[in-house]
Image (cartoon, rainbow, N blue to C red):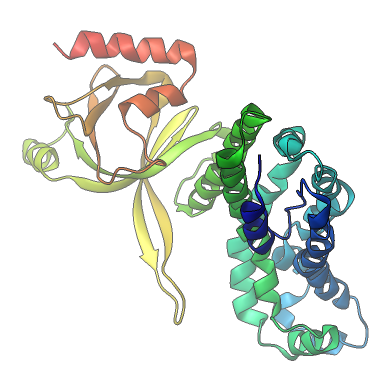
Length: 350
């Protein structure tokens, strides 16, 4: 079961979502949950509505005009989801915490609101840097009597999706079988959302690709690698140089296409480096083959195109859960295509 020590810690760390108390003495959690929820969603909603206040309209900076949806993203949608649905369902688990996993699974699709919010967050941050120090927001903060500025509250939804993960992990450690399978599946769901958020934030930074990324199918995985080329066509000196000197490339694997991009980092005064990915090359997955390892090196695998007319040797530089190697590359594809890849491996590694 979930002991009091965990509940005490959870109340402190996850008070915006944690409404689980197996003992009557801890039912006051509900009030703290509601209180924190007001900070997370209602406070930003206060700023949201103040944009319609005619008394403050003269203070609204020009850069913010008609850009409320950019600054706040789909925060109203998140508010509605919690206020009308999810928070109440979690509170109903007060006497049966083993049902929490089921709550997450039941609302698996609705939880995608966080992915949408996080995808917009970079645009929101750019806009906030342009107008955050305006008199309008200063007056709103005074009027609403907030200790923190708006950007602190706009960060809460991003933080909460990570706290979901930590909460479920803690509960899973303390569970003794009851609801364990549902908690594991719920954790996998949240981890998948976090991965999708991370992947999408990289994807929106791709530049120079003339096609429509939305037409490439699902983004299965992405990561940075050393890449060597060994092509049949081309000048011999260029071929020799390409064969021995690796290129630093960020790869994006979609259902239909594998993109090769060059990572660039741009800095603006007083802010962290923001990566962008300059498109360099692409391979249609329908014509791609793969070799499991290169000369016995388990860190390298080979992707080749059009009957080995183009060959790319790919090396995983830093082991990480979000990067892909031969095994994860295959698992990302559908079952039929995995069989094709394995057949290719068997015929080209002799």
